[in-house]
Amino acid sequence: QEFVGKDGRRYILREFRASDLNAVVSINRRVLPENYPEWFFMEHHLSFPKAFIVAEMNGELVGYMMNRVEYGWSYINKGRAARKGHVVSIGVLPQARRIGIATNMMLRGMNAMRAFYEAEEVFLEVRVSNTPAISLYKKLGFEIAGRIPRYYSDGEDAYIMARSL
Ligand code: ACO
Ligand code: ZN
Figure 1 (cartoon, rainbow, N blue to C red):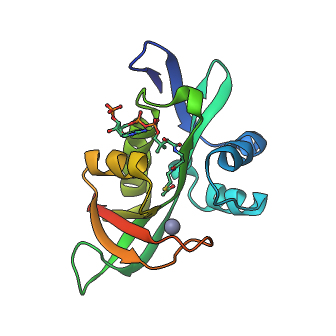
Figure 2: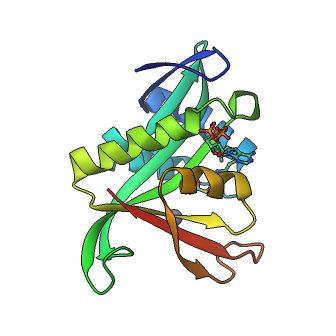
């Protein structure tokens, strides 16, 4: 799936493959303090292959979005259970930001969670200080559904943000 970024640079979005593992691990370490072992990425790839999206520019990976689908209490229809898409981790390298890559990965990942894994809503946790990410999610129609005190290992709180699919 080919895109032209806001500045004219081209990139493609496609599903993660096992050969992308090293590149995705390295992007995750560069852009986020929440890092995971290799098996954690592979487990999401094996369980929800259609919903693990990477962005490639000039043959190099510049972003990823890793998701899963869970069953539990709805953030949208309070008091009911639902199949919930969970955005586990998303990141774009600094040199490829602000041209729409995260927006398009979110749209494709959310669509895959709905179409292939019957997710009825989508949610994520985000640091309360992460204004860029919170703006991205608000633009995509997410709303703050809760706040988890000291969710992160350094003591920062998380917002839970959610929207229906
Ligand atoms: N400041 C303010 N708003 C921003 C910023 C920023 N630095 N970056 C993005 N936005 C908002 C804007 O509204 C932007 O639209 P605009 O450019 O037309 O103004 C909108 O988000 C869409 O931006 P994209 O270009 O689609 O986003 P990008 O590809 O730059 O990626 C991301 C955004 C993923 C947050 C990137 O900055 C990043 O990798 N940050 C570090 C990692 C991170 O914080 N990941 C999210 C953690 S939470 C989680 O993983 C569930
Ligand atoms: Zn999470």
